[in-house]
Length: 129
Image (cartoon, rainbow, N blue to C red):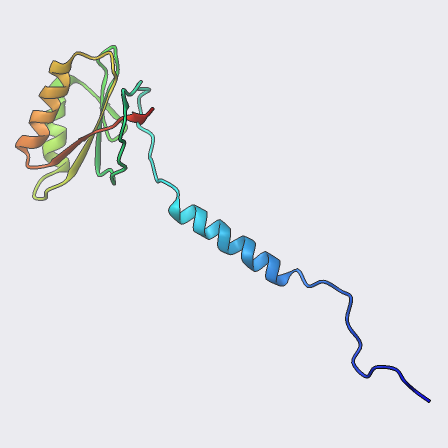
């Protein structure tokens, strides 16, 4: 008398579904992570309670020893207006200011005024607490 089951259970474990889940999680975390591009100059940013992330079209950096850069291109203080004018010509762009916390406010106001005069949206980069 043959009382054996016709369908045998395969004891092998298939890893294909596990790799699919891992790849989906990897894609999810890559897409939901914040995309922050570092500026060219080392700037010690001030802290803020709320720190929103904006897409950076143009970045202006000022270090504590008053070195200026626009989009990772080191320039002099006199060239800031000309450089912003060429980058923002004909469009309402987004300018993100990376100003060191030891820089006097007058330099922040000067660059912010130049960008606002070119009808750009101005944001100040900060780091969260």
